[in-house]
Image (cartoon, rainbow over all chains, first blue to last red; front, side, top):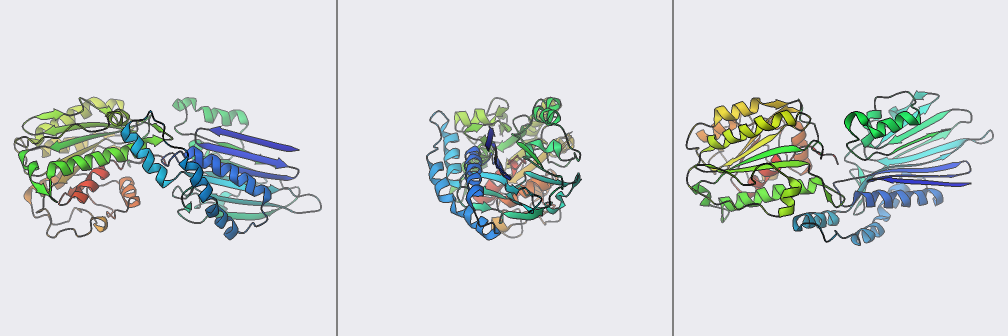
Length: 227
Length: 251
């Protein structure tokens, strides 16, 4: 059965595609200081979901090269998004400068191939930026593999592809019968950072509503996968 | 107290510019009147703030600005504090016309009054910044005690910051050949001008968060540098105004 859930909230993007034992996922956080960060988030999110479905080259080099390759079409599409006519001349000039510099987004994408009794599974993930990637095995958090790699200066740009360094890539086998949990969220939901235990959806929603601060300061996207 | 609160729509940064418009600002530097170089640099800083406040096609007011020009008197060029969105809507800054004297103390006093009235309402915001630009010795009262009082005012993010841009060719022993490689004025830097020494006493230490923003813009100011710039060329004046707008913002 095909399941496709895509949500947009401001400049963040989440996409999940599940087919049989395979789950592809993407979470993007558009860079608000770039031109139309929501465009980069949406464009990259959709493009990566498509790539995850059809690629057979899972090497870091192959992925890095693909991230560069998709910039020309992205730039072409971005050029169509000219600033609207009802902005002040100063804002228009600034927006045109930003358009030349491109649209940027941070991202985490990945693919889970569930293990069966007869066959090991596999998880593959790639990311750039400061969105959070947290991973639990048997209720023990094993996110230490990713620490120091969630960097604000890293992102993907429609103009130049990977910025601030090469994409980080992680790959590991999955064993049958081992309960795993993967949590991804953008920095707008950084209230979650100190929390180690699993939280039910209602509590996540409470954090998203952020009544204690009158709402979140930034867009936020959250995705949790358990198997 | 570490200058890390990000300027946002909910927690905008307050920047007060004090601009000396004494008669000497008519003198030439880089073949332009000093006042025109200042006007251009200030306009560039405003543009930078617009750049850093734009989300999608929308301008979120992450900065609030007051511009006080001073000579014998103080002229409030924006008629109070204005949001960066309001300034962008107008499109250009009011003219700066040089007058006669240079009563910096009056300008600092007015800045102090603004801060006294604003501080209770901006406790969750980035520490405010007063950016003072002058090209000579202040006439009138000594501004240093007032500047010191301002530097002792604070919000949880840190003490109010005071920056000085001193348009002078005689502040340092040697010229700065490459402004982008310059390490900044440090507490031990030898200054050859008495007025420059006074301005240094009135300058805050550059917060690390500001320094990082400037390093991202390819300026190599050293840790411990002071918020003081010798405006000996247009680029250094421009760095000074960019420094004033280097409040951290969310990417």
